[in-house]
Length: 361
Image 1 (tube, rainbow, N blue to C red):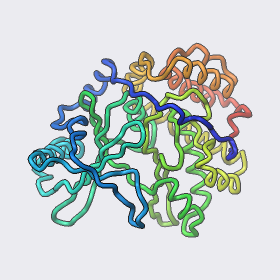
Image 2: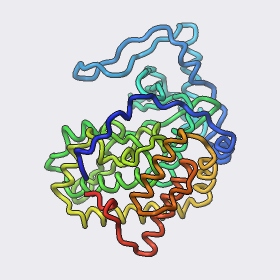
Image 3: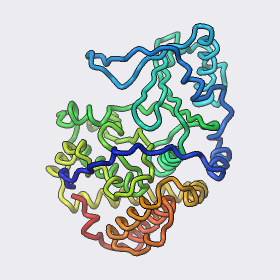
């Protein structure tokens, strides 16, 4: 890994929002992701006022708590509860009657400009969150590929131009780097191994922009210390940007601390071992969900979710990375994801040694 290899200029132009195509919509209906919802993103935009939210230490955040007209709030809250019931218990309102909507927050930063809903259990004050966003095809593909190819499962729903997402719990990556990375209770090798595996998951399925604030770290106590897992929580940049290194978290300057941490602990042979382990697991997941994965990739192959120049730039970068001209035949981002999976499968089945570019430490 090279922590000095920054990616300048990746935020100079905001990524456009791509509509959900008819084939993708059919896929979402088939797997009950597309549902009739009692609320829309545009309805939530009709707030009357907003109050800036601060963190527990008093620092400003990117979120505002929004206020709605008093005549609308009761109906709005009931519809938000119905959405939560659809997301969590397939619409069974009988088990969520004791919940109430505590707060609605809005973030004007980023592509999705999400609303965050805080919902509370009246019996025990336990809080949960979910998000309402503008539906974007890139993000939907990102969510579905995460669900199928990663060790994590995701609940989300769509309806026309509205996207509902569950909350992904964990320690934000930037906070983990500051407060937990050198924690004596965590085994450093476990952290380094998971960072390598996360890096590989993002690269194979072409999920970009995994800076430290776009993923979370999940810590689970075990009989021999803590287990560590890294989860993406932002899927806006699924297969959009043209630079190959944009899909490798190791190349963002925001991840320099964790990259250097890995370099101190792992040699290239160990890093490559962990890459291969994750590739094998990823392909096992792909085989288990083969029918579903092929359907979503079929939709993605024919979906223009990135400019043509980005596709050309990325296919050339991948062809050079893997020393393979097979990528040069790809005409879409979906085709590049499929070819990435195919070439990784070939390398494992034929025990092809890594190219110098694949030895990432």
